[in-house]
Image (tube, rainbow, N blue to C red):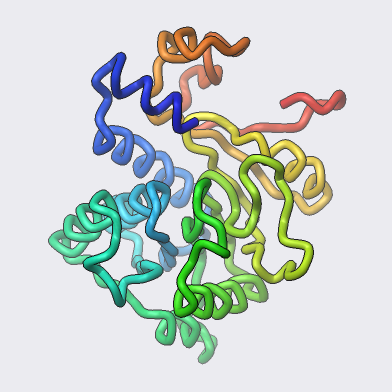
Length: 249
């Protein structure tokens, strides 16, 4: 997927910021569809997926959602990726607030401030739990321990945090690392690891969706895969996926 996005930049002139906004709009649109109320928590990591989730948090606020944004590693804000810092700045300039882990895990304990939806973009495709600093690992454990037992709907961006995007495997030594989703939104195209994940979770009712972030058919053709025309979105920007009987998506 990274190679496709790089091709879209070099061949079409599609910038990172353009793809971030396209992705954010799809995340926000699906979030509004899934959430049964207006309280949304957005969990963003120091990754491209995290930057897109922060942009989605801003768009959700624009559409009347009450958004609580947590950015993993915010204590060292100067070390965050430039695309993450830029989206964080825009979010704050738009009036958005950032919460810390302590405040997050205390939400809903009184039974009054329940969370309707959690958007999970903590790790994304290219960051693993082992890549995190010790402090961020501890925060991740706290967050996962807060999300998984809750009754909130959970929308994972690209892949659920804790799932290997290439193999679909989860850490065998600690299954608590996986943030268990009710929905997954793949940006641009389904990631390889989603197929085994979909097969394993079919009985659990996990819905998997794919979002159009602006990568044209010409880019797919130049990429040289059998899927020369990419994902058939039809008239939708977000399309639901299903596992066929033979195992094909």
